[in-house]
Length: 178
Image (cartoon, rainbow, N blue to C red; front, side):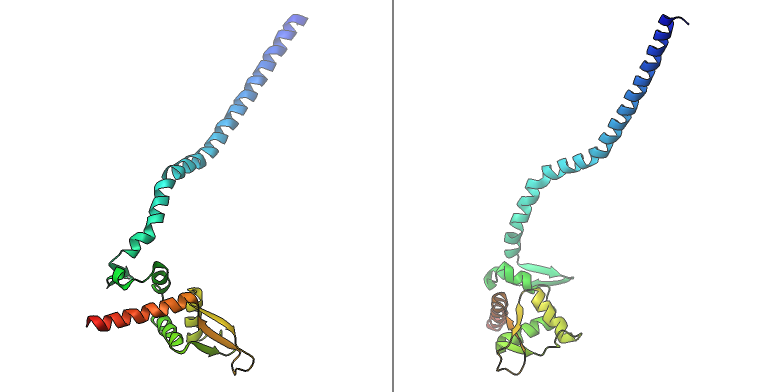
């Protein structure tokens, strides 16, 4: 093989290697695009529905405050809620409370506060009810004064006081309607 033929053969070999590298590069690019395509489409869909979704979430409290009946767990409660004039924040904090938690809330509201001993958090029915009220930001546990017999006090928060007043208002309204 002369010098010129050898040069052509090497150029063809180099061209084939370059083509293989380009194909490999294209395959990587296609795979990369496939991997990025679904997140991009998801992001595009989210961005396109963001404004309507935001509008719905902004209007939801207003719609709920004008509701005349509420269905919770298959039980429907009808009340002229706009006449009861109970703020949305209070309805939200009360709607999932157990019966025992509502009783405890009213009991604390009647007395002003309840003493607790240091072991109140042990697994008892009362501690479950108290924790439910704490989680709904209706009561707070605080230290008693040094001259008091029990170390802790359970008292209503501002929201708890408003909820207590709303419950009493509903009861009074119910007697007036009858």
